[in-house]
Image (cartoon, rainbow, N blue to C red; front, side, top):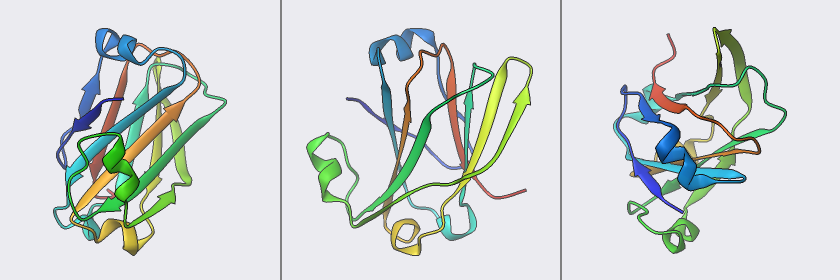
Length: 131
């Protein structure tokens, strides 16, 4: 499992060659340092499929940046995120989720896990303000 380091307000893009490393059920972890997440709780996942039967997104808060699979067990708190909205944009589906648990979003580091059960050629993740 690989953990991708990302930043706020910048779309993290995984293309086909990168996603090919995650064959089968995709479980992709994105980690970032908390920068006033209290005001930036929107998580947007964009995929190149029109419909997804199963997609799970979860967030966890950490005191230290997780860099290995074993360190992911050291979470302070976690939450399964509820789908806020899903829209279609051409060949893409854009799913939006909100962080709601302050025990997660007030930690120094946040990790976002995206799990899907279909093969994809494109995925992006964006964390920012609701607007």
